Each structure stands twice: as structure tokens, then as C-alpha cells.
Image 1 (cartoon, one colour):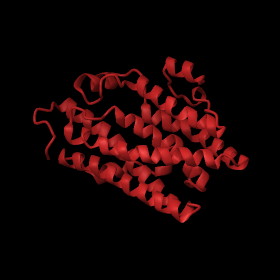
Image 2 (cartoon, helix red, strand yellow):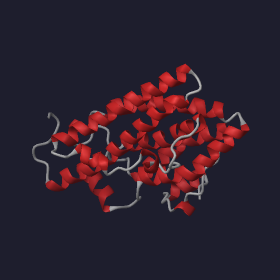
Image 3 (spheres, one colour):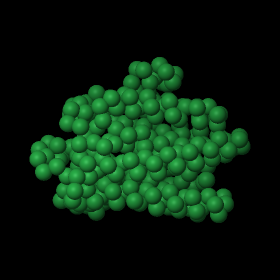
Image 4 (tube, one colour):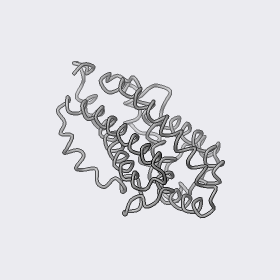
Length: 245
């Protein structure tokens, strides 16, 4: 496969596989959730939109799976270790049970993945890094749709309360899984060898995520959950700028 450096060290390869496996899990879990959401859509247009989103997420799975396969990894074996899509994102074990739940996930869950992906754009493994530009273009469409729908749904007090309940239970899990620890040898190594883009360390990616989601949540009348109580590590500038605890 083009775009795979022939002089990769074992450490570089292993770290690339770890990062791509995380993306494989997130993209495949999101694909399943969007696919299941088709039946919950309130209109045929929304059903078609969810089908389109599921197809795009499947393509994102293919981008990263192809590189993992070229590196000799057993993609099916990796996916077998992921567990249920709902558990991966900290959702109710019965899955997304309403359209309000679908939009809540679109608001905070899919958005988190897109911000993390920005750190991989055009990285030192071109076969993977170059594909992230199309992934981000797709995610921008998903995000815009989710934002508009979240504001609309939350005009109804009962649906807003339902969405807040889902956010309280699930958003901390998603943030923890998407961004991980702020300071780690792994993060430093990725920045050093170019697997992550310089200037987009974990703290900055976190900040960008919250700066993106806060205006939508405010317009929808939603509040952030208690991240500290759920063991989520947030950068000091993030906590201070967005009044998080």
C-alpha cells in the first residue's frame, strides 16, 4: 500500500496501530448507532440522512481498516474485542431508544471523535493521515445536522430533560474515551514522531471540543455534566474557560 513508510521503527508501527485501532472502534461503533437510528427517525428525510451518515461512517471504517490490514493486523479480530457499540460510548445497554437520544449522541459523541481526528490529519503515516481530510469533511456535515436538530428537539421541555439525562450519563464516558489522559508518554511520543499534529496536544483538542459544543448546548438549554465526579481529566484552561467541574 502506498503511504506506508518502509523505515518505520517497531515503536512507531505499534503506536500507529494503537491509534488506528481506537479510531476503528469509534468509527465502527458510530456506524452501528447511526444504522440503528434509521428506524427511530421521525421523517423519511431524517431516515435517509441517518442512512447516509451510516454509509459515511462505514467508509471511515474502511479507510483505517485498509491500513491496519496492510500492516498485517487482523481487523476482524480487533473488532471482536471492541464490545457493544452502546457500551463503547457509555450509553444505555438497550441502545438509543428515541430520536432525542440519537441527537444527543450526535451532539456530543460523534463531535468528540471529529476533534480527535484533527490531530491525525496529514500525519507521518500518509496512508492513514491523508484519509482524515475526507473523514473531517463528512463529520462537519454530521455535526451541523446534529446541532440544528438538538436545538429543535430541546424546544420541547420533556425532550430537553431526556437529552440532559443522556448527556449526564454518557458525555463523561465519551470525553474520557476520546481524549484520554492529558500528560502521557504516549502523547509526547506521538507529537515527537509526527503521528499527531504539533500544536494539537490533548489539552488543545479538549479545548477546541468544548468551544465547539458549548454554544449549541447553551442555545438548546442544556448544561454540562459533572466531569470530575466521573473521573474525567480536564485541562485547567478548559475547566476555567467553560466553568466545568
